[in-house]
Length: 148
Image (cartoon, rainbow, N blue to C red; front, side, top):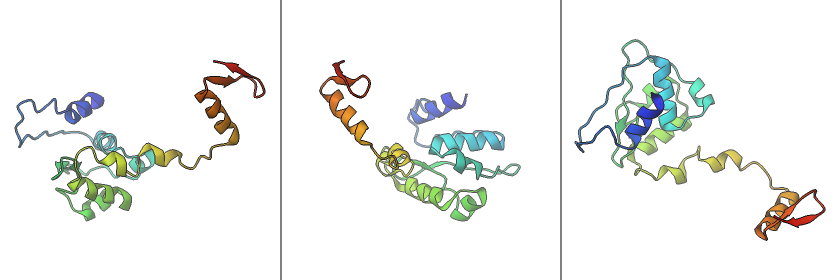
């Protein structure tokens, strides 16, 4: 359910008539709400674990910003987001999303894939293997080079 709902919203399949003031209300438990927000905003498990569940009848509104990205900060205040457990980093992302153009976040998002792996150093063996593979050659046991 969560995956299909997320995909349908993201691909604009729910709003088929193209009406500009389309609203979708999801009534749910706190955990499910947090999971949905985690998936939508691409939060890490660690960030998710710091979030607080909504209180009874508390509303969390994702509203479309001026550039076409959804943000919690269009409707809510920074103080509310802090109370919910969002870190300063997450709040900064919500500020950005409130005015960002749809699709731009991949270049600037701090959770982009390259930030997770930039601490790995490339070894000489990896460089040699990569160079050999570019020549359509493979290393078999580290000493003998054969055609792939």
